[in-house]
Image: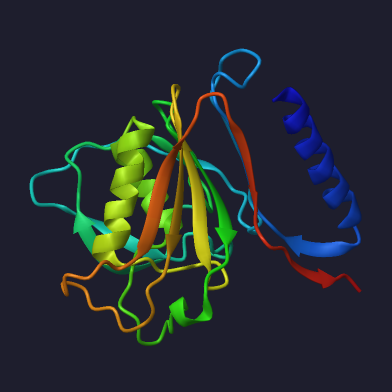
Length: 235
């Protein structure tokens, strides 16, 4: 297993060196199970292709019965102030208590060491959404933030994100494509993939607003997910 990991890292380094002369947008996630790491740790790594690398702590809070949590569009927008999460495009029921977490373009870890990493992947053209007419509201980065606020277990966080996507509809925020997540706690890792369902989906129709699948990563495995690069030559 160690040889495989080292080979993958050498490959990633070679790709990085080849892209030095280009402006590139590409995310890569690496996950290592506790029986595949040298010290028994669960390891998750994420390189973020977006321009917003600012990190801030969103502190946990207590909320009253019946309160609603806003769903935002624009979490990744570097031009917004640090504590501006974007336009509010919907709401979901608020948790009674939320946990503190690190927030960035893709929120990544909470106070209980639940961690999530993201890589944009591709999907069929007929699944793409028309943002002018579609009614889906749940971006992957917003779902990540909600999960980190509410859960300590990778298994529960994975199911929660899937349910969010089904109920509120998956809204791609990165070039209109699908998303892959690895979700880990101190004991286990899950891999999660989600796809759109086209612009005709209606909330409350009884039809899921996303196509998604999740699987537990065996403890003695490691994985790498690298998305397609969006590259243009630097003048």
